[in-house]
Amino acid sequence: EAGVVQSPRYKIIEKKQPVAFWCNPISGHNTLYWYLQNLGQGPELLIRYENEEAVDDSQLPKDRFSAERLKGVDSTLKIQPAELGDSAVYLCASSSGRNTEAFFGQGTRLTVV
Amino acid sequence: GESVGLHLPTLSVQEGDNSIINCAYSNSASDYFIWYKQESGKGPQFIIDIRSNMDKRQGQRVTVLLNKTVKHLSLQIAATQPGDSAVYFCAESKPSGSARQLTFGSGTQLTVLP
Image (cartoon, rainbow over all chains, first blue to last red; front, side, top):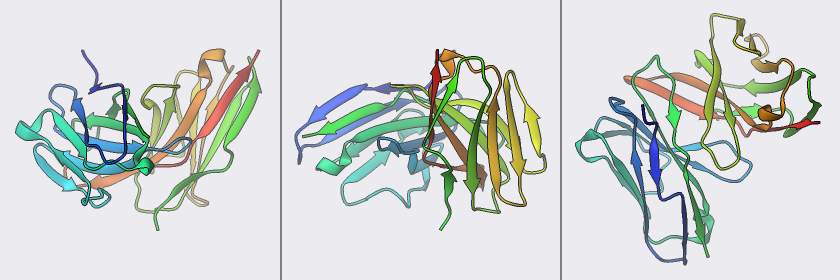
């Protein structure tokens, strides 16, 4: 069974440019998470989806970040415009319910120059 | 605010020795605690979990201990191997809607020396 798939693995962009990340969760997982991970830190939640509904986006900087999960499967996370401080690893995870673990993708490492 | 923190940012152990990684948590509402292992360039990988109504759980070469009185969690790795070198995160979880809210600590870098 394929795990959580994210793309791209790496992205380098200039500041003020837009960028998008894509996540394909494990088949059948209705919960999808986007986390931000700075170097040496633990992942921090940006947004959580239950199917296609964003149920926890309190930590998402809505002035520049947006996310969508059309049809409750794949999800995209967008930053527009990117800032130098957005350089980090963006992790996607999915789970199938309250009593199951969350499985993580390999992440997208974003570098803003 | 809510937080999950680790006592030590780095830990070095000799191959074959036992490793102990500690974690403090602050949210009494968390009912589930998880240890994740993260190797360089990879996402966090589940190692072992423990529910708040337990104080010990054993897996293959790993044991998690939970002390709710002092809000302390530890991960013990027996006979540490080079492949155990990674960053280890504790995370606390509580029910949120039909899923769970997962909060991570800042991690401990474990280095296994030959």
